[in-house]
Length: 456
Image (cartoon, rainbow, N blue to C red; front, top):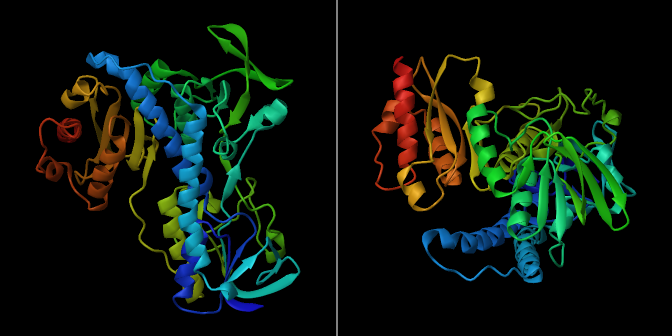
């Protein structure tokens, strides 16, 4: 088979790259060896939010007593919880599969691709000669060797969403997005859960003040050690976790060890060396983050596989960029990117927009903040925890970034990211309307604090 463009991987980035290329040529093929359905729909964003929604419902019943509402104690049916997670997950996957089914058959090829040289791929017994190639093979869970001592009691997030019932106990390792979300959700659904991590990580947060606020709130809800010392071993149908707490060692048995310790790009089976692609000490090729081109080759790297912005909307954008540049090669160009935005659906929610604290710490910036402990609407709703910190450029007065742990962070993240992308100054934002009483009044408080800091 000879084509103008070959796209390897039919996830979010791959489908976007294929659609972009297919606008301009019929000489395109989409290659996929694994299950269709995208990581987000099958084992990521959507099933995790389904589990969190069930956990939130159980938590609201438990919290009702604080309002003087004597609710019946939540009785959690693990089978029903997981039945809804699986059925709705399958529904979301079905939407993606419908899109794949609508792709012309002569544009699709089932099988895993390997490079033979810079413009030839082998898929099963077939050779594909492609003028340009987009690699969009996604990522997979990375499990550190010490955790593999858990044997067949070791699971990843993919396994959770196929459960028929909730287990009695789970030890979660890793406090990134997946670990925080699933760990807290399982704990709220009555699963005996402990979350262990190393390095003091609390999701993706880099601001020490916000991180400390988030950690305090999360630890008040369930067991979470962000800098744990642990040992793991399997004992029959359980995993034994030995951990240190208060300078004493404890042992506890769990049904499963859930490894949420990050993801690695799916590059190792592509035989990249045959295409003349050199890898660094982390196993990554050098590529242009704006154009997504690998060196000067007619090969582009899009989505989670480039290990840059592993988020669905970013993968979709990168797929479009890669597909467009694959069509226009050798004329390639970067495309304007949206303001970075990320959200963790824990409670309190966590968000980061624009530049992070780690990125602005050495710049000439001012910082404003607000605690939600006594913020009016938050206190009324008993969600008064967490903190928002906003960052402003001293030279322009513009808002450039923010980190937050607190109520409605998913919505506040959008408001602030839109403001940053539009180049709004802090003074312009303070002239915007704020209703009373709403959680967004906390944003105004933080902006007022930032405006004062910019004057100093």
